[in-house]
Amino acid sequence: MTTDTKAISDLAETITVCSVEELPDGGSRLVEADGRKIGVFRCGDELYAIEDRCSHDDGPLAEGEFDAAACTVECPRHGSLFDVRTGRPKTLPAFQPVDTFEARIEDGEVKLEI
Ligand code: FES
Image (tube, rainbow, N blue to C red; front, side):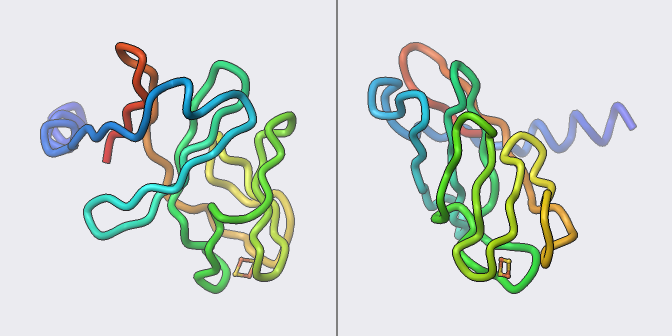
């Protein structure tokens, strides 16, 4: 297990999303990396990232309405609420989680591990 985890982290790529000022509390950014669209969200001082593809019917999940207080985003296609901290849906019709990614602040910039 440890070896697998290390192998995955060795393959991970870090990309710079934007400066911290460009992603204030309650803000979100959509980035395209490695052929995938990923939404980066800021809830207070924490950053979270999920894939921009709903697990229900491939809707543009990360482009939905973001509620920073609840750390949720609403799929614009059929309305499932997803927790951006875990990628798990909180309401139907989606019932499977979406992929999450590590996002962090480093040297004044928002970094994303893909
Ligand atoms: S595609 Fe997201 S809830 Fe249906």
